[in-house]
Image (cartoon, rainbow, N blue to C red; front, side):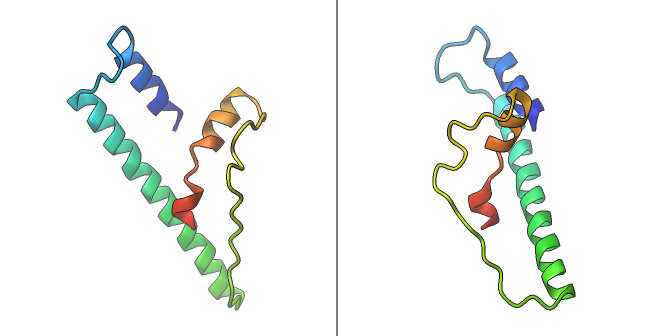
Length: 89
């Protein structure tokens, strides 16, 4: 979802702190829909595999602040930090 950050930064450039507009709201809504769709598809894929292989229990680990201060490169870091693991859970 790298396009989101770039578009937001471009629109907010030179604007005061806390600037918001209908265009920003539209871009954010589109991103939220895409993220929700991706999370739902990932969950469905996991559940389908569990049903296929007769797995009856799913254990989902959750480590608080696991995405803080990671260093996996500039582009990968931006993409990984935005994954909504809490929603998937």
